[in-house]
Length: 420
Ligand code: NAD
Image 1: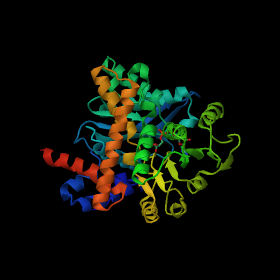
Image 2: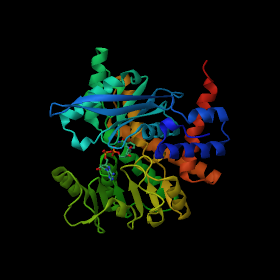
Image 3: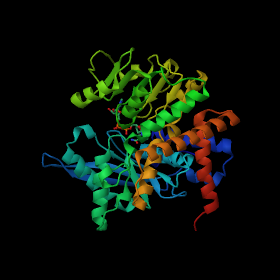
Image 4: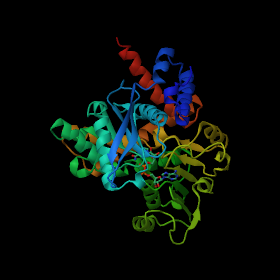
């Protein structure tokens, strides 16, 4: 079977290769395997946006549903300069395995708009988001497909999406998106959920490896929603955060970065770079600096064949989606590093998105302590299931997590059968 050319991209080839490898190990039915390699549906839209200059610029956007076998689809919306159909399709596939692994009643989806959000004003971002939402409106809905924030999007983006959708329905429909502001039906703890989930998986990994998390040296690539929260929580837990970066560059401080001071610096300057008392370092050099835990929490493909043998961390916690290439995965495994795979490590976001969706449907909201306790329970259970399967089958955590997720989706296909 060849990867279908419409969806071809590096990340899609990686996602297909992972699926094929795990399908062979699971002895998956060939017909079901064939169906899982394709998205169920994909929409490509052009988005005319009135810019502040008065001119109209056209952007390209996507929304992809990978499968709907376990329920409505769920997945983030990404604003980035290099987004394409293949990347969005691959991320939608990963969402399918992630939701199934976490036992959530969702299929996988993803959206993207090719743009550089840093170059857009608030007004331009709002125009873009509203028109994109209008263009994909047939694809989304509270029991159809529920977007959430991802790279380059945030609570405000979700509020605009919710408002645009609601206007077309003549009523307020909070359940159409998750990760929205609290005031319009967001969930306590959603903003911190992905970073918090990473910390819970790290706790479990350290426990299984007979280590203490406290006192470990940590490097975090990316200081956005995911990276900043993970760094703050690990710093509070007594880890030493020795290096951090964002899109503008990195900082290195072997005696530890005070995250509260760094947050103030970022609020003032817009970047981690230039943090007093730190040395500048490039994003690529940061990956191979000496540390115990490496958390890639920015974009895909950051740990690759060219740098994996120089990664010093004994634990790699994948906050980002697809940060490790398949070649690098093999090298890390041979070096004895423990990689907590993306579909497990960063699943805290979709778990609390699920809580938000459930709360919204019931118009009954939980306290943050309840959310956090439930998140911890779900993440810990999933981690321990994956660890046990990995030990039983003699495979790494990524293979075990994919086996568990893909198997559940395949079982869903099997019992539902083929229409018509
Ligand atoms: P964000 O936009 O809030 O932050 C991204 C961070 O990465 C910023 O600090 C940015 O400056 C930096 N960055 C961007 N491009 C970079 C590059 N080329 N090199 C180095 N740094 C770069 O995004 P986020 O929501 O924190 O998402 C980060 C990653 O986590 C993405 O891969 C996303 O798919 C994944 N993820 C996010 C969530 C979520 O709930 N937000 C959930 C699961 C996975």
